[in-house]
Length: 439
Image (cartoon, rainbow, N blue to C red; front, top):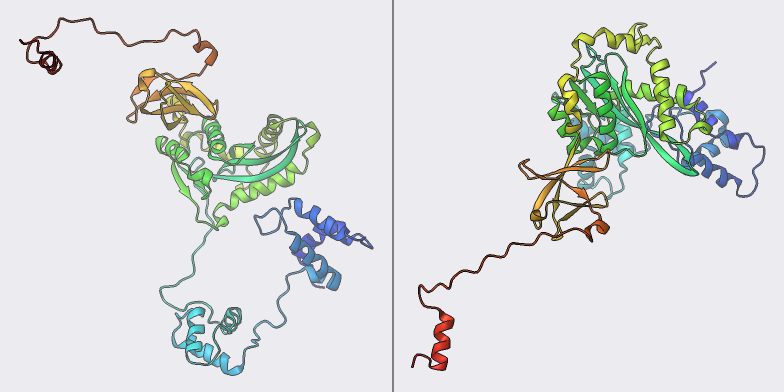
């Protein structure tokens, strides 16, 4: 008896509301498909979380025609059999064997130039299938070798951290639907979660907030491996890592296997935390994160992992505590390290704007470009600096009402001085000449 294709079982489970119905009324198919397309799924072998309506309909009709077998990815019965004419097949194979570095595009152009096929009629897919069937689809050259990929693990805790963002649940907070994103930092050697939190967005600000808490709790990693998303490419995050001597490493695009341990963590969180989460007790993000942190500390960190030879992540991490670089004196400077610096032009009324608010700076800076040192997490302006880092003064929130009673500074008037008699005066000379006063 053949094993059932796991993908077919998954697809059948997705189509449950459809296949369980004996008959669908008019318009019900589209309605149910639309509802299914809005849901999130843990799709086997994929990082995607949603399935399009077109794909769902294709699965449904395949199930209607062939049952469960229609939902499996079975190999083509015509695999290796080309529908191209024998003469064209021979020409394609001969062209490839003559020059193994020829691409499919070059082979098509060559056959068109030789008059063997009309222009733009030779299917690229047909050529690819033919070459693949004869073992010629890959470029045969000594310079081209398959990429070597090997499993690895950091020798000590604190050597490598991984960072990533996972799409979290959409919950109702105060009658408003809110999409959440889980930002996580994981230690490679111990699988310990340095810190994680559900956030309302996946921007650099949320990543920096999670990193700050992770540094306070688990020390400073040697390397931080992240993907190429905009949140991780932010100059502010790069600056923080540079000041803390953290080597920021970016994974290659479209290579999720580089962070397989984090993918496994996401799967565990979905299966064990999100599956048990009761949304009726969640009033806001603070409630959600409180439950997340309790589950991480009490269950995930204390459960033996087979990949750790039966050790728990917490025990494996504590085993390397003497090797971990702790913040130490840097803890007192951590807030300063996470401040952002933003260039602004001071208006003629001595104010600058940031985050939709106005702040007053020393009035003598009017018309000059300054650097605002801000705390993005508390939405406050700490001070004003020059481009070189010189302190220029404080910044206070603009209070229009208070300014009606504020005493203005006026420039001092220079004292009257005796008339300067040295040298001729153009106005006086003109006056004397016009009225002939010199007579």
